[in-house]
Length: 240
Image (cartoon, rainbow, N blue to C red):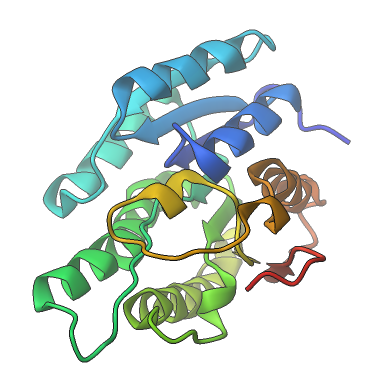
């Protein structure tokens, strides 16, 4: 079951990992794409690959850490690209470190990107989306419902994002907007290679971005009368 090609999605963090996989999976399903990331070259490469399926795909470089710009830029993207039916908030960061030692600036950085930028993206599309209904997918984490030592800041931000998702679902239901929190276990993405994450896991046993992307597609393809409010997706190996 595929959406007609007039459905349009905005995906953040679309240049790699889950965001890239979701973009390409959506493209194969005939969904037009507004792609957001802070990496222009990688983002354009994803857009080019998506266009090969016949959909409209545009790259919009944007650093979501610059919070004072996010809401207005997302609103402008939605106005330029056309009405957004699906918002996938995928961009985020990992962080490891004991709570006793975390600098305040690092704590704030985690919450700015993992929670506040998501709120700003939502606020950027909501006025338009309320006129036609739509689906908002927030990529949370299993860390939004379970805690792990040395991951305190990350877990706290994901608990907050899950609460944001559940509250938004209740508030926007009257406008025909569905909200889904996707909560995967560990996924083999570039997040494990970032400077803020120090962890040693068997990445071959993790979920792949493509598996998560297929689950996201399934949630948006449900009839409008149904919603998956929260989906926990784990590797059968049990990693995290």
